[in-house]
View 1: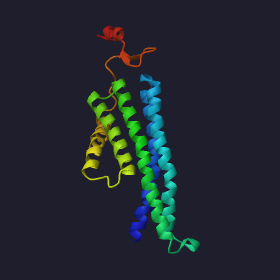
View 2: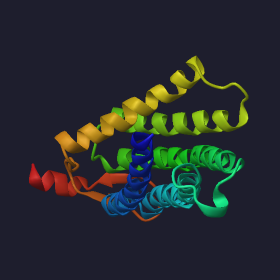
View 3: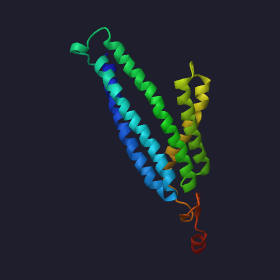
View 4: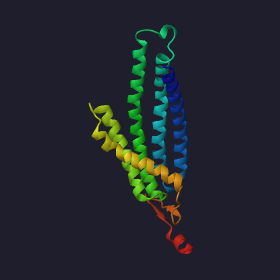
Length: 203
């Protein structure tokens, strides 16, 4: 029992750290991608921050569950305290699915922004987009479809493993690969194109 209580406490601390790290990642990705399209980079960062804010708000439910299930005392001790604690955990679980919808939209926008920037291979960008779509589908199905799970969940979540793990490994192993030529955002043009004159001067 003591081990379970310690694990629960550590899990809450880990969630707090995850929220802080996600905020830092949001700002870092925005600064990295802003030169290739401020609107797209800002939208991607906004949805990740919305995900982080939702998770941060849901931490109240974890603290409530911890107080009722791990450290019950005084007036909170009673036949209904355990059920209230379990209800708080369920609220966190359902709310986290909503947060993952925001995170999925973030990944779709991130994949598009990375594709535009040329920092990572285009195939990996499409896997990131597919990962985002998988999160959105899986999370909404978990909230709205009775009995959802099994093979359907595996199909929806498989792209998330490839896209997220692939992107993480790429950044860790290869870092940020600069485009072969400077990228200039033309006014009125939604795509980032290399400056061919600069490329010819360097060749």
